[in-house]
Image (tube, rainbow, N blue to C red; front, side, top):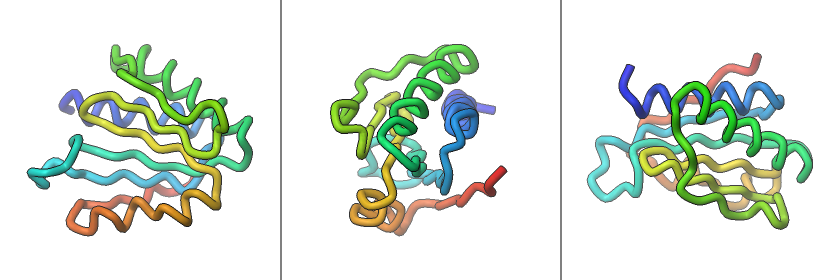
Length: 118
């Protein structure tokens, strides 16, 4: 397992710990112009859950993969939080912004994986 896969697995574990749903990974590594190697997206049911998922991802990535985010944006309103881990970008959405921005379909040439609910 390479470092990006290890980090992605830790991020997914953090999301699942706080019951984030509709988890999608997008492998962007074959796209030369992509800003990173992978996206991880999920949906949370409330601003409080968005915040809890963000905290859980931070902790899981630090403990399991030894990584800290370079930046976290969107915590103020907690409708859409973006976490930048360099090779992996994480997006935690409330349902309406997720549907509106539809990031999964922005990268049609990426390998998209819808993870099963637990």
